View (tube, rainbow, N blue to C red):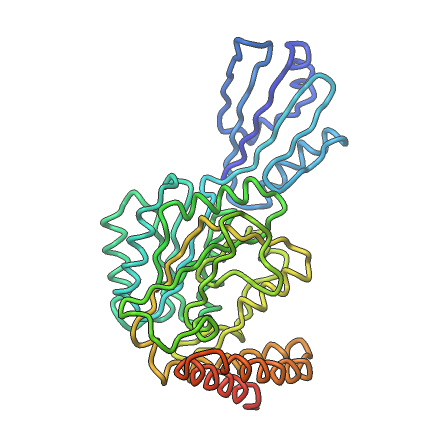
Length: 390
């Protein structure tokens, strides 16, 4: 991590005066460089300080802030203020802007498909890193990642082995090891477009109020889209997402897909990590950890944006289209909803909403094909059974 401080002096007199006041903490300085602007009287000095911890960063910034009570901090990355005839800009930055976290479990072959799309990113390799969190896989995931990293040495690919089973544990392990100011998540059954990382970095740079974001999700069926799928039954399986072609606040009552979302690091520093009592564990299809996280963000009034150009293709294999998988998925969705309702003391409200959804489901069956209607009824029955399971 580095703190880069750019100081522009309008005149030699003010430069001398500021230096006498020791605004520059020279004891921490690694190097300085003078740059002369021949079209003006400005002279710019660039100072860089290497920091191993956030406390060192805060100490450096505190030194500058304490020298001038008029300083205004506009956001976590940039501070700008004016003192007499001196114009200064202080930039706090990391060499790594974004950390891309991929949690994986026993999907070495599919993971390589995901990593190949990661390797095609147009963002400068030094500006981002990819952290693969192996959540106790028993296949050849470790060897596959090591081989891929060796073949793509220009990329910053890091391998982390997390022994505690569960998607939330794996993601939290990635967050703890991430170095970026922006932390993005994708899953091991996806493909992302080449400007995926660039789009997220640009979003957070240009929207200073944005604390989280999510992109477009397109379902991809290698074996063909089943005839029984409707927009309602597709959502728990593939979670397709398209809210138009413009950047906008995320629609009310919707959240980004877990396989295509990004947050500022400060989000986790403020509200904590993923709840490890929620989230998939091995073959157990419990969810709700993302909904819980975004609910905590909403309670803190943290803004979330939809980013249409951050496109992810969600690859749905044949085994996720079987009757058994769909039944288990719907049942565990109900368990997840009940678990979250118990955490927040909303069981009665959950029961009322489920009754309303039953009425809506029966009405939807009147306008869908028989095969689609059957799946709608199966989904609602299993979700209700999960809600009432305890």
